[in-house]
Length: 133
Image 1 (tube, rainbow, N blue to C red):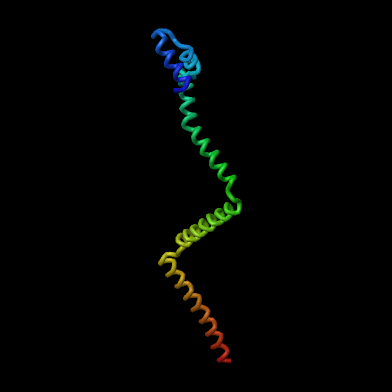
Image 2 (image 1 turned 90 degrees about the vertical axis):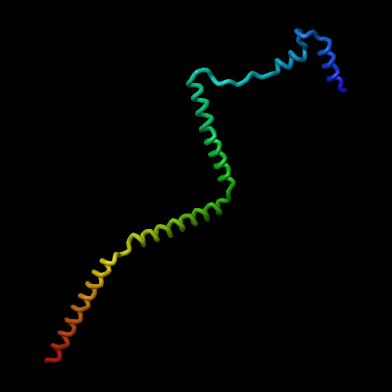
């Protein structure tokens, strides 16, 4: 047995139950007081707020630290890829939104046919006039 353990066991055997030993007294003095919540309601709210939102601050700090470690070239590449994807998605949405309806297509065809008919009539009338001379 170690000398310290032997000394402790002898002290415990020889001491009376009410008497405190030097080591036990020193052990109690080394104990740190328990951390308790404040009795004021405002203090409790403050602690709860810190528990809730302090965690968020820690995660933000960790994310900022990770971002500092990241390679800036890779960061630029990922940003460009995200922009490209967003652009493609926007183009698809705009194509869908700007598609003409069947009625619009029908009206457009009619207008084009009328224009073409007018052009041909003018041309044919000019040609006919030149023949008659």
